[in-house]
Amino acid sequence: MRSQENNDTAGASRTGSVGGERTRMINRNFFLHIHAPRVHVHSMKPAYSFGLGIILGFLFLILILTGVVLMIYYNPSVEQAYQSVKDIVYVVPGGRIIRNMHRWAAQGMVIVVFLHLVRVFYTGSYLGNRSLNWVIGVVLLIITLLSNFSGYLLPWDQLAYWAVTIGSNIAASARELTDLLGVTAAFDPGGFMKRLLIGGEAVGQPALSRFFALHVIFLPLSILVLTGVHLWRIRKDGGISRPAASATDRAGDQKWYAWPVLMWTELALLLGTVAVILCIALLADAPLLEQANPSYPENPAKSPWYFLGIQELVSYSAFSGGLLIPVLYLAFLFSIPYVDREDRHVGIWFSGQQGWKVAGIAAGGTLLLVLSQLFVMIRYGWLRDWLPGISQGFVMLLNPATLSAALFILASEMVRWRTSSTRMAALTLFTCTFVALLIFTAVGIWFRGPDWEFYWSPARWPVQ
Amino acid sequence: MKRRNFIQKAAGTLVMVTGAVAVVSYLRQFFPRRAGEKRRIALGDPRRFPVDTYTFLQDHNLYVYRDHEGIRAVSAVCTHLGCILERSTEGFTCPCHGSCYNDQGEVLSGPAPADLSWYEVNRSADGRIVVDPGRSVGADHKYLIS
Image (tube, rainbow over all chains, first blue to last red):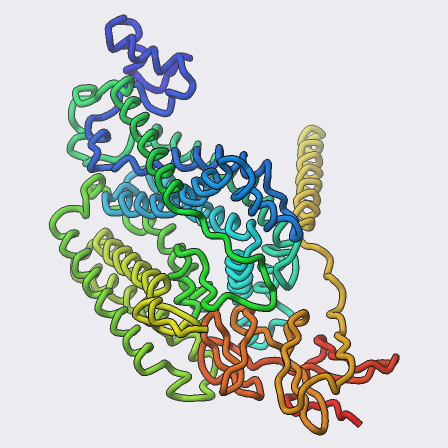
């Protein structure tokens, strides 16, 4: 395959040197085309990218391979699903390990995809011509979460059933707003979303079939295609981001041949990723509760841990916590590269000293703000406890989730005004929202017990 | 208009219309027909329910309350996110996000956006006592046991 996009290629193959040999290695192999023949030195610094993107690719590979095995034994019917998962765990040789690997690789993907988002944001890698790739990345983040969530229903145990019941009603929570306005009978986007998602009013066979189709075909295929575009954009945008100063260096001086050094590093990462997932799979079993019982929710009924931040918000108000805030957050993520165009910051962690300071203050402020609101809520209750019979509109619009969001937006506007820099404003808002997400998630995971009450530890939960 | 332009425009319009119809009919597949009316639930002999007690009908996610005069039925599904309510000293609590309702199904605390629905209890044409989840009534609606 002769590539015209890279001048190095043509030049190097003519010379027939060691470099030419290495370039030919890549040109001859379809799969090695993931890299340009020569890659900038800065891109290979481990502490710059941490290899997070490629680790995501490897985790996805593990998921595909283990997923195919699971799919052979799994039966997506309400009557059979639970039993078939039990068979995978207890009867199929090695089935337990395969299922564990699938579960932990999936959760690993959620963690790494967020770390990747954080890395790309704080190094300003959405700047310049990389805005489109940032958007594709955010879409991939959403699809990763959806893949996880759709897989969660398939075992058809208590965990699965109630997580998806709650999830599907969050999708329907626009009804809270339309009910308030009294237009639900004529205009019901909430009901529309819910029917689209689970094919009826309650979680049953149609929901299981839909989630199965999404989980095994539609979402993985979307990830595959979008990952292809994502990687292709990296090539087109001139490799992964780096500070502008080094881009002006004489081309070629600071480039290494991708084959073999980079490739070997990546192979090592693949082995490392597989080893870590395999070890976790050997040590920890993926949970499987009793078969789904539509009459008795688990108490507490917790969704998968990466959604517990949202579940905490939803416990204030279904509409604002489940729909309004997530939609605003995604709108913020999508809009970052189009609002902040200060390209000089590309490739520098936190854009230098000022950024570190801004992010630090934002993180500290958020910690203080969110924790104090939670303290008030847990200790003294909230609107409905103070003013019984208060209108639902107030409950919906005045809670720790919406108040925090409003204050974060205010703070980032203030930073923009003080520093006259959109990058600093973006740093503020991103840091505030991310720290808040971490706090709400931590509260949901560790400090919520039966009836979603606050407990310092599960050891203090009442005996039921 | 030249003949070539006309043919181009006509063909283009035709392709677009066909495409739109195809897309709409494809997307239509994702919405099943409505699964019929909500079915009425036969309660059986009202005397099987203990007096002055809320009895949970687990197959129907419904609480039935019987007193000396008659019988009432209230939804056991939380109006917040659809979990099934448990009885508490005040009335009902939701295990998922802690919404509390009183015995009348009115929201006391928590994120629930609306009160619980009470359903009509009646005698059907064939003489059975039935709950109709399709018909909401006031909390004081009661089917009198004669």
